[in-house]
Length: 388
Image (tube, rainbow, N blue to C red; front, side):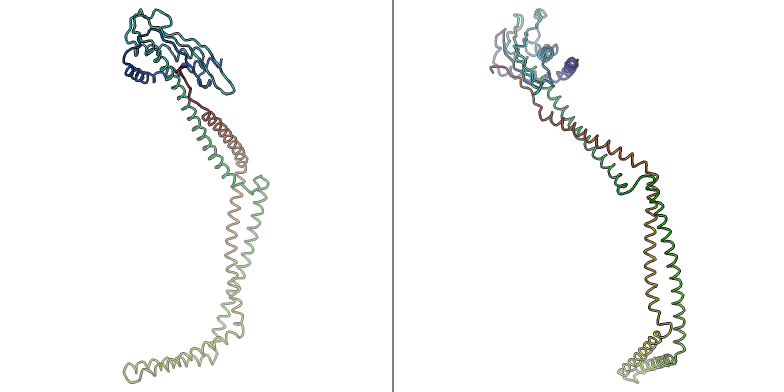
């Protein structure tokens, strides 16, 4: 049954591919005509034809050989190109001018090779031109062209199959990588329902603990701010009540007034410019003395703890920012855990898809390897006239 289907397929392929042969045959026949000064003058011509090829491409049984060599389409074309128009009486014999015999057929399943030796004989009746040798050459040339067309078609099919399998490999690789990237989102996590529930409970507890800690630190921060404000108020009052500071403030005011008057006199030309420097130095010394006095007052009483409170306030502020960032991170993890709880069934589906994608990739690679091997082993047939 398989051989019958293969034979039928080859015959159908031949019907299509032989349409490509007329031009080549006509060109070759024309070339032969140009190369020969006159017809051979013979009505009988014989030759042995050796065919070697791959039997999975063309099995070269008697039916296929006859169809390729001298089928109806090929016969009409050869007669027209070589003999021209001939009388109907010329077709008296059933062979239609050509006798074909199979002398030898050797086939090897292991190497997929087949070798056939044919005996071809052309006899032309007296009512047609005596060009038996030219006719025989046209038959062989037509046969060679027809077989090569089938082989080229098979080669193109194998090459196309190789390209298709390569595309299948590329598609399977892309599909597998996409699924693996999706699975990476689940990596290092427990996607069982109970595991996700435990993760959500733990994250909720961490968020609540962080909120409580933030509330305590916020309360401490408010207390420190209040205490700093009280200390600042006390310091301002102490500074106002301090006689030395008051007197230093008055000295500064006098120095400023003296400097202002001196500048007016310098501008009016009543006082040299050098006197301004001495007044500016006195004003600067008075300001330094007042700053020192304020520093001394700040080190006494409740103001002495202001620096420590300020440092603690800075630490609490930094901790507050850190805890806010931590809470945001925990909330994102909590949202992810809740989303994954809803998608927990997707994990198993992705694993199944991943296994299927791996299998598809392996199958595509196996098909590609076979196609490449067939393409590497492919050889065009050799059709030679024995003795040439």
